[in-house]
Image (tube, rainbow, N blue to C red; front, side):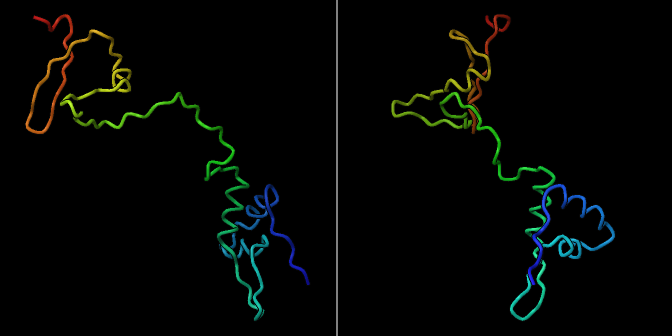
Length: 127
């Protein structure tokens, strides 16, 4: 005797709603998500049932079907910099673009115990 195929899609959702009064395990079995072992025991496959429900509701968990994000190249800002071999600190273009900085903008450097703070000097702040 062949076991019927498990329900999927709209049929699964309709049956799931219809069986609202049953336990989750009973719903999974009624929708065909079980196997019969060699000993004749029925094992309900809850994980396959949940995955089928998620798919039937149209939820994408693994990112398949999404359009790839268009990249303009380059790296993302990590908010960390290293001192170069010549002793300079380089602040990359990702940071200057994010702050809308333009060539010629000036900064005041303040040294703290564990930080270097750059404060933009605006025309009103200039002496």
